[in-house]
Length: 335
Figure 1 (cartoon, rainbow, N blue to C red):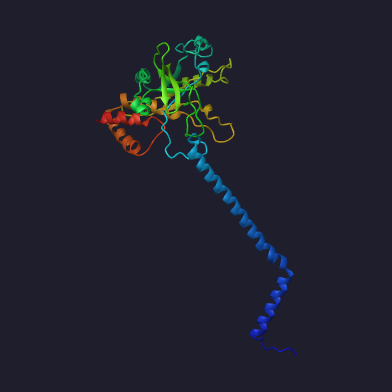
Figure 2: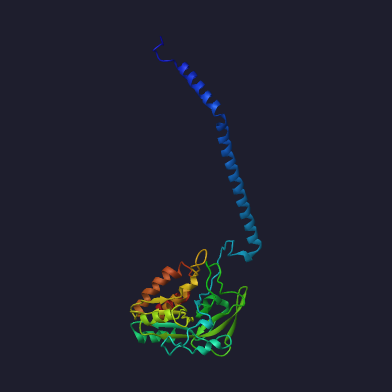
């Protein structure tokens, strides 16, 4: 007859030890291979990290020895300031008189056939107050190209510049700023052979005058219709009649600033692989903002907006657009 009394501690410990030894003998390879496998994984991770750190170290050495790599894979501790530019169409694609558009104030299509192209860059404007719009249209472009070599970039931004080259997918560098590529100064009238040499650090290029037209349309529906028919898909002739930008001033007056801006979004290249490209809308915003604030708004509104821009923009943020020009003008208005 079995002893009903509970086993002693020594008996229980001996039984548990024998049970564990039996289990470990049956699973000996599992107990050896699992730790070994984990050690191999840790060793592989260590080798990968060593290789990555070595490549980073080599890249840092390349960046120090070859500054031309900046903007690609090298960090840029002090990104250069870039002059703001409008996106303008190629001369053979700029808006001209056509059979499918009723407007007679557009340039004649013969300008597309001239050597180098002489078609103006066209901007459309509409709004509730035509006198205000006509006044803005007459003053939206600078009348000359002037820079100060001792303060080049800020004074360069005082001009209305444009490029036919689309922006890139980042702001490390502007594809429109390269040696041999023309930069355009948009002015109401251009003299013959109006070009100026320009040197931006290692970039040697030229600034060429191109005429700018700012044309009034009766309403936003007319603007939409003209923009749509300017696309090769929107007209029966299948030609491109591109407008650089368009503005609807809506209820803008001396006390209100309310503007809608049209721009060509196809420059984003949305259907390409990878991130979409940036678009040059900031200069379009700043262009109408500057002319409205500096010439046509009520002094009290200018004072309020001056303080806003000064404390929130001029004091702490660097913008790709020409905000410095706005701040300087508004500070002058305060004084």
